Each structure stands twice: as C-alpha cells, then as structure tokens.
Image 1 (cartoon, rainbow, N blue to C red):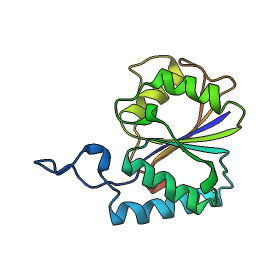
Image 2 (image 1 turned 30 degrees about the vertical axis):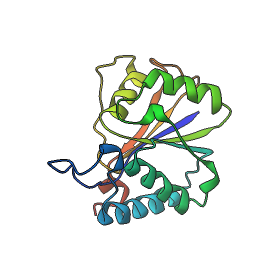
Image 3 (image 1 turned 120 degrees about the horizontal axis):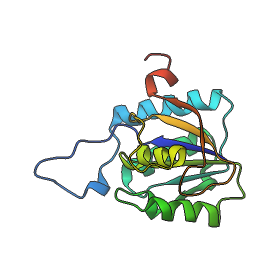
Length: 167
C-alpha cells in the first residue's frame, strides 16, 4: 500500500477567549487557495488515490474536500474519528486494515502532532520518533503490510514550498 499523509492547510488561529470549539476552525482564504495549488501540483506528479480518509475536524475536512475536488474524486472521500485531534493511532491502523486494505493508494488528512507521531511509529516502531509536517505538507510511505509499528519505508516528504517550487 502507498500511504500518503497530508497535514491540513493553514487554518484560522485559535481565538482567546475561544469563540467556538477547536473542531470548527476553518481554513483561511489563503490556506484554501494554497491547498488548491498544492493539490494541483500533486496531480501533475501523476499521483492518484483510491480512498481519501480525513479527520472530521473542519480544517482537515476542507483540506480533504479541496484535494478530492482537484483530483475529481469526491466519491472516495471518507471520514474517521480516529484522525481527529487526540485520536487513537492504533485504532486508525485497524480501521484502514479492516475497511481499506484492498486499496493500493490511501490518503489520510489530519493534524499535528498526531501525523508526525504516526509516521514515526510506522517508520521506526518508536512512539517518540517524529518528522516535521508543515501545514499543507505531505509524505508518501510504502507499506507491504500495515501494522501499528515498524512497517513502512519513507518514499518522500515534502513541505508546501517544495511542492510549489519555492513559492
């Protein structure tokens, strides 16, 4: 399986005092516009997805919807509570194995530090291992058999500036 991991795009800042729940923070106009350019650049790389699995939090959901729109694959967009902030990574792995293991190419969209921790576990088996995921950054892992632990090879990791050629 090729597992693509995408951090949500630039979202509205948390307001103090909070005007609503963290789960309702939307992408900024700039974040949505940049995500559209990132998705278009990824499409030019001839990447495709069999399923897009997103956190239900608004900023991740909007990011995933932009990707699905650009890739013209709205019908493959699904949501997982295991990808929300504070979600259970081992339960996510189980969910992917149970419902999506037949797919060759899976994109997950979520939040930090959850995603960098998940990548660390899949690459090294170490729950403390991390990579840096910028907002709108993406990585590709090659996984012969997905498990919660060391099972993946990092194919690439790109920050938005690398995807967009230094913009």
